[in-house]
Image 1 (cartoon, one colour):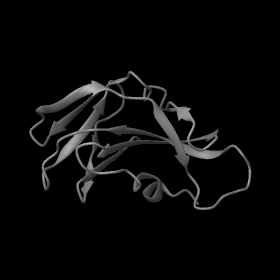
Image 2: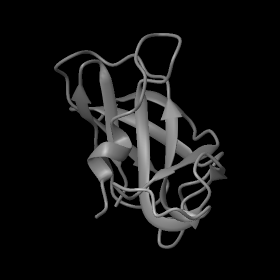
Image 3: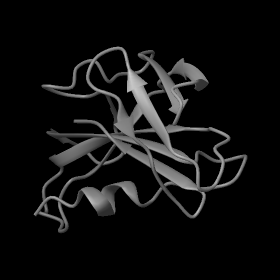
Image 4: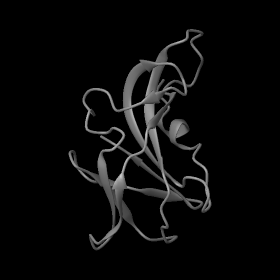
Amino acid sequence: MIAAAAAIASCGGGASVPNVAVVVPDGVLRELGEPCAGGEPYLYAHATAAFRIEDARGKTVLRGELPEGKAIPALNHDPGVPRVPTFCRFELHADLATGAKYRLALEQGDPVALALKDGKATAVIG
């Protein structure tokens, strides 16, 4: 079973570590931890792709380029093979106010709400 919630829950917090996870649920076969970019149909989610984070009024609070992604498991269990179905996770640093609503926008695709919990935010593309 695909475990999107588990895949996105391991992002760090605080000023010196990433606190926003952008997850691309593409299911591509990769080795865990290897560098990645979004697979079909999310080819627009890749390192250097422009992004922006907007507040509830649509004001841009952060703009930049996605860093290199890292392959994370898409399954709840280890199938015992080197290449497994994965999601691609990009980690960002953003100063977001607790309790506020934000959304992430890439150059393509619809903007995605950021789910905030315990000082960490997650956006699942698609």
